[in-house]
Image (cartoon, rainbow, N blue to C red; front, top):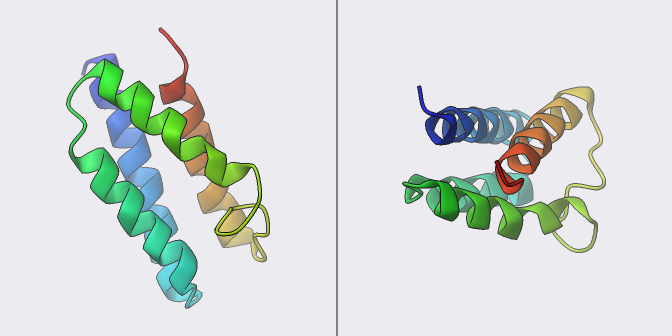
Length: 94
């Protein structure tokens, strides 16, 4: 599997986990973010688009309205951390 495809699989898996956790915890805000990011990454087909989408998504982890700074449960923290790691890897140049 090519590096770009591998990163997309990681990101999509992390988004699935985030979506499931948000649904379980009835967290509509994070569920909406997961759906929006899934739509963003569904159209990614190459390395440049992946890097750009990942870089545009990373500000969600810096705080502010709609951010991932205030996770309240261990399952949500795990889902958010998994997504952050996958996006960080994709945002780097390789």
